Length: 169
Image (cartoon, rainbow, N blue to C red; front, top):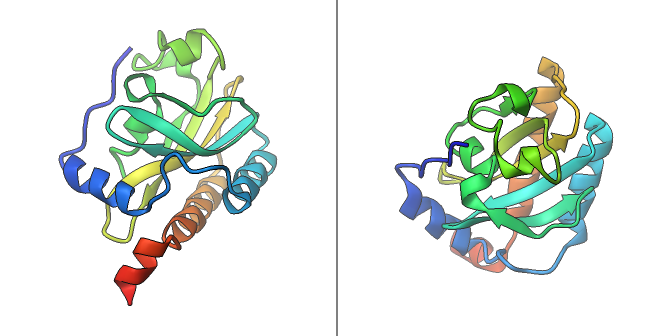
C-alpha cells in the first residue's frame, strides 16, 4: 500500500478547508442530495463528499456506506487531491498503490474509484466528490465531465458558508 503524499501547498490547503467551517458538522440535505444523485446517475454503490484534513478524510456526505471518516494514510482521496483531473482506478486490485489497501482487501472492498477534486476558489483541492464500487468499472468521457460538473456544484455549496460569504463582501 502506498500512502498519499502531502501536496506542496498543504498549509494553504488546510487553511482553505478550515475556512469553510464544515468539518465535523452534521449531515446536510444539500450535500446528501448530490451524493444520492451521483450514486444513481453513475450506477455505483457508494458516492461521497470527502474532505481531506491533516490526518483523515472526513465524509460530509456519504451514500451507500455507514462511515464518517477514514485515516488519510489509507485514503484514495488523499491521492486524488494531488491532481487536477479526475483520478480513476478502474480496478484497485490491478493498481500497486491500492492492491493491499485495507479498504480494498476488507470492507468496503473497493474495486472501482473515481474522485473529482473539489477545487476551492483559490485553486487548492480540499477534497473530492468520489464514486466507489465493489466491481471494476470504466467511465466514458461524458461521465467524467459530468462528475467534474457535480464536483463544481459541491464546491459552490461549500463556498456558501458564512465566513466565506463575508470575505467576498
